[in-house]
Picture 1 (spheres, rainbow, N blue to C red):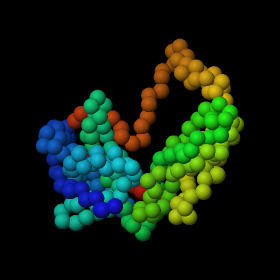
Picture 2 (picture 1 turned 60 degrees about the vertical axis):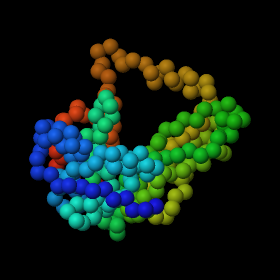
Picture 3 (picture 1 turned 30 degrees about the vertical axis):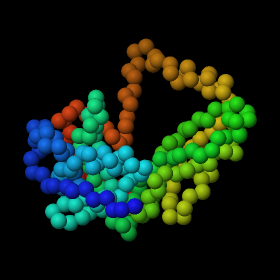
Picture 4 (picture 1 turned 120 degrees about the vertical axis):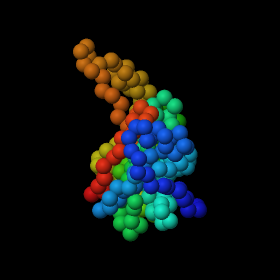
Length: 230
């Protein structure tokens, strides 16, 4: 795969009005930061970042951010979306050191049709769709594939059952269930309970999105320098 290079420009104007002017010019505000490095306000093309986010490896894509004549190896650490049209409003870039491990969330992909579905009439319950891992930046996998073809009704796959490359360290709790097969009747009975309205007087919990947060256009705030997770 060829190296991906995204051109970035330094910016010195901040605030809602400055951000609106920037977006009217076809760019979005962002911040470049890294361990023990001062955060640098930048601007980038939203189309280039959107292309990266839509790729197979998504926000874990390693690419070069070209700024002031030099290139920095980065990943998209966070981004904000306009809530109605879904347009990118802001992006954070984390500069990585190729010889130092980082912690990332990787999507899980199920492979195969379980015996419990084909023969026993069960239903797949995909519980954990992302796993937290630690590895060197160049070893970040596009996805974690889990073969469920031998799974019967009542059986499950836990994190501890996964066989991954020695280059990857799983940080997610080993006892967490990734997927299991349940009886169709049990699945149908569980659905009404899950969809039940909150008790009278209880406030509904808002949906929380770790990445790709939405915000009103022009209201993306400048972010303080972030620290690397340990």
